[in-house]
Length: 239
Image 1 (cartoon, rainbow, N blue to C red):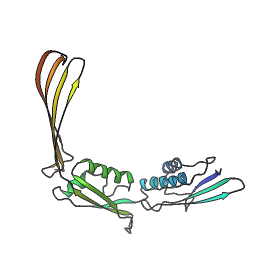
Image 2: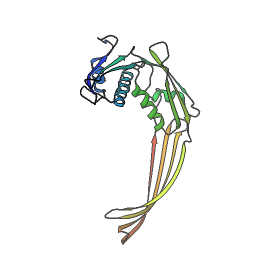
Image 3: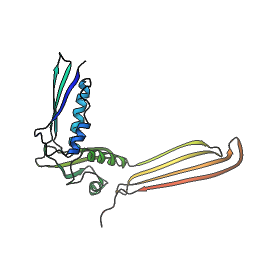
Image 4: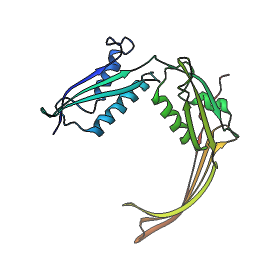
């Protein structure tokens, strides 16, 4: 069994003025292996990926992480040096939205986490992807930061494919409580991207027949209906 004897994070400039103390602490917290642990190649690789993600989430979009592992067979020990090259901190640049046919691209740009001038962040990229999918308007979302751009501002291209925005469903069931039994049917209609503004409307109708206190002792039988509507407006323009 080979165990980790030493582990060191190294940067091109050991003082690493660009890496804040809080980010450095985060990096150490992301390490999968610690001195004394059994050396495992998969955990070692997972740790490198976690370090890279932490750097990229801390605005270092072009960060690189490499490692050197020296095995001492006689001592059954591994000395690990992980090299961190954060590069320069970056910010988001121009955001281009493509593929919108019935939705205004400007509205998409307003509501997402990726905004020009903000520090580059993987969290912002992931949050934007989740938000666009959750709208129910798009069947696919591709977000491509241009890491090859020459400056420290990273242009972002967002490509979406619009989905069918209307859906109709129906079902039924029986509900039991200590004081009532009901048989019901449910009809749902949902319209995403209502009037082309990324608005969302959901209507649910639930007609039912209710027996109290139970269907086995129906002292009273009545009919009813529950109708609910939900309208979502993701954002309004300024002025």
